Each structure stands twice: as C-alpha cells, then as structure tokens.
Image (tube, rainbow, N blue to C red):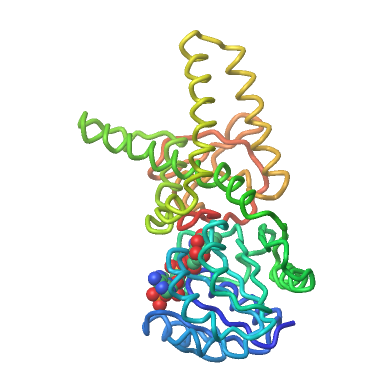
Amino acid sequence: MFEKLALIGIGLIGSSIARATRLKGLAKTIAISTRRAETLDEARALGLGDSYTMDPIEAVRHADLVILCIPVQAYGAVMAQIGPYLEPSAIISDVGSVKQHVIKEMAPFVPKGVHLIPGHPIAGTEHSGPAAGFPELFTNRWCVLTPGKDVAPKAVEKLTAFWTALGSNVEIMDAAHHDMVLAITSHIPHLVAYNIVGTVADLEADTQSEVIKFSASGFRDFTRIAASDPVMWRDVFLTNRDAVLEMLGRFLEDLAKLQRMVRVGDGPGMEALFTRTRKVRRSIITAGQETAAPDFGRPHGEAKVLEGPSGTAVLDGAAAPLVEVNVEPQRPVREHGGGDDA
Ligand code: NAP
C-alpha cells in the first residue's frame, strides 16, 4: 500500500502502528525516529522497523506516509524540522488527541503538494513506550480523520484504507466537530474524574478518615481514569480549552438541575434520568465499544465469581467488598488509563 512509512515517535501508539503495519504488509519499509537513544535502542531490539534514526529528517526522506506519534505540544518544533524534506505528494498525518490545535501547528510547515490529513485513533492503554504497543490496539476502535476541504480525495481514501487495514472503523470529521465530540465523551469525564479523586483525597487528609479504604466501586472506576498520564492530559486541556469550557458549561447546568432534584426530593425526575443514562450504557455495550465486565480498578483475573441471586454474580476481590453485577459473557477487557481512548 505504501512504499515507506515514517513514524516520528515510537511509544505506545507509534509501536502499535509499526507492529500492525508489518503484520498486515501495509508498507514495504518502516523508518523509525525518536528523540532519545534509549527509546531508539528499545525499538531496534524489538525489531519494530527497517531503519532507525534520531534524525527525523532522515526518516521522512522518500517516505510516502509520515505519521507523528509524539505529544501534541512537540509538533511545532518537529514540523519545522521535517517540513522542507517531506516528499511531494506524501501524506503527513498524526495521532494526536486534539485536532484544531495540531492543524494550527502542522499546516504552516506543509509544502504544496503534500497532503495533510490529521488523524486520531480512539484507542489506548495506561502504558507508554515501544514495548507497550501491540498490533491489535486499533481493532474495532474508531479512527477519526480530519482532512481540510482542499485535500485530494484520493489521499484521504488511501489513508482511510490504511487505518481500515489496521482494524479501525474510520470516520471523516471536521476538526472543530472532533474536538467538541471528544470534549464531552473523553475530556470532561477525565476532568470530572481528576476532580472527584482530588476531592476524596483532600477529604481523607482533612478528616483523617478512611474514605479511600472503604471506597465504593463507583469511586474506584473514577480512580482508574484519574490515573491517566498527567502530561498528556495537561496538554489536552491546554490545547482544547474552548471546546472543554463549552461542554463544561453544559455539564454544570445539568449538575445544577440534578442538585435541585436531590434537594426537593424529586424521585420521579431522578428515576427518569437514571433510566435514560442506563440505556446509554447498554447501547455502548451493544455497539461493541465496551464490555459489561466491571473493572473495579484492579486486574480482572484477581476477582473470584461467587454465586448470587438469579441474573447476577457476586465478585469477591481481595481489596474490594462484595459487589453484585449483571452477568454477561466475558470478553477480553482492555485497560485504559494512559490516555483512556484519549
Ligand atoms: P508514549 O508511549 O509516551 O511515546 C511518546 C513518543 O514521543 C516517544 O517516542 C517519545 O520519544 C516521543 N516524544 C516525547 N516527547 C517528545 C518531544 N518533546 N519531542 C519529540 N518527541 C517526543 O506516547 P503515546 O501514548 O504513544 O502517545 C503519542 C501520541 O498519541 C500523543 O499525541 C497522544 O495524544 C496520542 N494518543 C495517545 C493515546 C493513548 O492512550 N496513549 C490514545 C490516542 C492518541 P522518546 O521516548 O525518545 O523521548
């Protein structure tokens, strides 16, 4: 499909792309470039590519597909370096979690004739570095591409075919729309998780009580999200500020309505809302975007399934109280955290 794929950055996402590209035979050669010698040595030892260099200019020479797999705040400096050396008619793409910001950072350095097609695979784990990647990371996950209006449709088709071959479902979207959608589905949930876990930690410190020891499963689910990579998430909030503030405004309005329902004892109102939200959870499971298996913030293998009332099982985990859950067939569960589908 491609003659030469150049991956700039070879952490979790870059190495997963390298492994899947190799496995599916999507590029004749794979050039790997990264910032630090240790990371490059690790990638070489893992046999992730065909050539290895700390010079991104060398990596992009003769490449017909270049993908930036580095933190979004690093784009400007890297693009200034590689821009003049991109092959005419090459595709330059990325995997960053925000899109309007990266277009602003990349576009000024893209020469005429080179196709800029930003991308965002909505897939991740809590781990980082070359060894963390695996070829199935993108299987059945969405990959959003946000090409500008002037980009040649043929180039968009080619990159769509590439991500489809990696196992993703591809959606073409306007960058602003992407940032708004991700703000509410990913960024606000992370903000809420960071806040609630911070509040509980402060409460424990202030009251010297054992709130964390006796935390219920709802709180433990929040701690999983709040364990996400601090630098990456700082960057998300610094670079998608407008969309996050817009969605946060709506969230706070709805929270105020819920607060009122609790204060005035509006049982039917709460029941109607919780019934609606339960349906959302079920539709996400039906769409194959999540499994019904609970996580409770610890590896799944640790929990013992005991017998419970009909239709339920009782999970007994060393660090957790007994919890009832709906019984659903077990499917492999992928932990998220570093960039929980960031
Ligand atoms: P990672 O495992 O930490 O790897 C980061 C890579 O970027 C490494 O090769 C690292 O090089 C390089 N790098 C770090 N800082 C750099 C800088 N200032 N200049 C140049 N290179 C630098 O990260 P990742 O999880 O693969 O994330 C990479 C990108 O994927 C990010 O833009 C993120 O938004 C996006 N993304 C992540 C997830 C997720 O769940 N993790 C999901 C979707 C999208 P050295 O090791 O050599 O320093």
